[in-house]
Length: 307
Image (cartoon, rainbow, N blue to C red; front, side, top):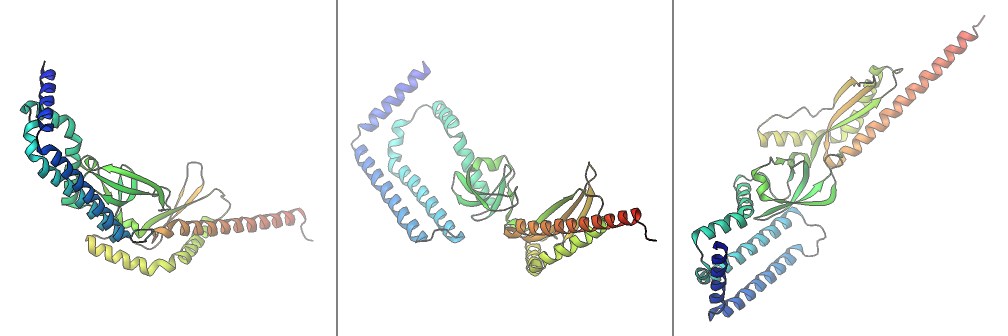
């Protein structure tokens, strides 16, 4: 009975609203206004984009502001145009409350999450963030969602993967958001190198590993130090030493695991690690060849002692 009463009330309200003289006029005004605002948005975005194939940070910020401004303008205009009609759709307070709870719960959470982000400003357009284990660059922020372009952080290439993720702003109320903007320019990059041969002196290998690392780290050392100083002043905390660090441990099966930690430009991290690994393993191979030749020579001397 309650559902039938509500349905009849809604049908009656719609019927009365549709038959009012100003309904058609307001409908035409609404259509014209929306089309005009959409055309305005298209013109402004086209003007900002110009002929650029790839948008810079400032262009993305302005396009984001235009999209949000047009969206808010449409909402405000609709409210102003149709406000006089809203009384014809009024139902009981209970029915309205139920409708609001069921229909606008996620909407309100998204708006609240968007307000929380705007007030605390944990990130902005162009920042790197990590949400639910996914790292990406913030490309667009609206009142309802945040769009990020995914970055290959786990594979340590730090390149765009081509995938995007649309995050409802309601997620910011329930999950932690990590601002990874520090890693956008420089990163602490670990280079693990496994050596399964135990016939080479690890102290010799460690010494050579340090020499190889210094060779490839030297071009970045000055700028890395300047960047670290700027970040420490801005954040007010002291970061780890940027000089290369070296670690050695054995695995469960008895192999030697050498690890180098370097502070290098993010986009050069994987390349630098590959070069260090290549040169180090080449040195290991040379040492084993020398050791093999020496053992062969000793064996011959034992089998054919000189008189």
